[in-house]
Length: 59
Image (cartoon, rainbow, N blue to C red; front, top):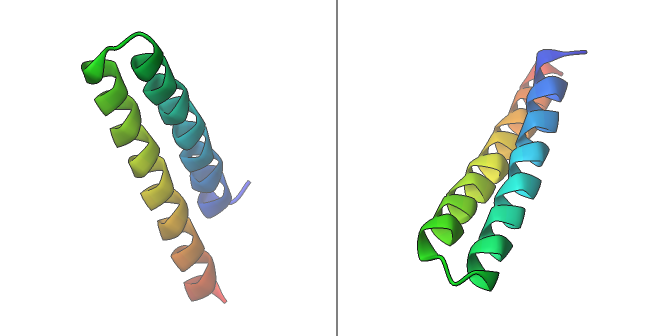
């Protein structure tokens, strides 16, 4: 598996995991958990965008 593809899979995983934490934080009224989830979700999105840029530059 190419590095950029592997990074994209990891980014998607972080997005999903972050969204789950965010929802869990909202349901349990835990702003700390909600913030952690939001941060992880955003980090996953950034990682995915960087992978897209890397794929364009490889061509």
